[in-house]
Length: 301
Image 1 (cartoon, helix red, strand yellow):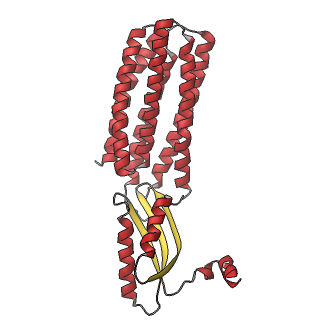
Image 2 (tube, rainbow, N blue to C red):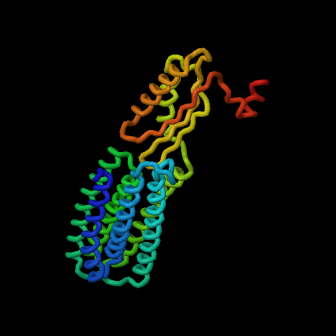
Image 3 (cartoon, one colour):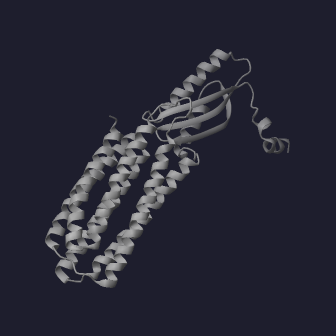
């Protein structure tokens, strides 16, 4: 089992434990912030299971039906997870408003406080683990899961503070205000996640820093006179690069091919943890303007 798959399994297990204790205490105590946190943990289980499915399929090699692999399923999973986070945030906001209006009391405050402390410890450990896996693998799904549980960690801390205030002041409405604040933060955190997933689905180019490294590799390669039509994109564990390299017309095809292989290998070393799909077209002259009339027109001027 790959490291990223293990991450989703661990996340599902932690979420399951948190659901049991939060849901029980939330229902018994009547705390909207604890109940909202329990509902969020239920969603976490489904999200983590879906993420496992997404990673499992994204790691599959290209086939006759999907020639470029299934890497984009990770971006799709990130968008879906972001939408789920947003929906849960809206529900928590609704519960918070209801709490403020009716000002229902909270019972079993001591037990609720202990549960939230345990929740913070478990979630904190999970966030550290997921961030380690995300950094090591560069997996967008694990990255989104880490962000999700980081928001959970902050919201759990807010719930704990809310319960502490209620415990000492008996001001029950503060539970609703904290619930609304948590909801707003959750919705805000989901925005970047959805945005990143959509950009990948739309074939956004690789990061500027990576593209610059690719350009430097090409420009520093002997006997490559120029290049054009450099295009990049990413999909899950795959980085795609397409480029036309221009050589002197007198060079042999074998030598040009060997040089392009060297360029390909150097590009792969930019991030060895990624699976690179590099397509290099060999040109004897720069024919880019034949494919772009605007460039030709500018050249004539």
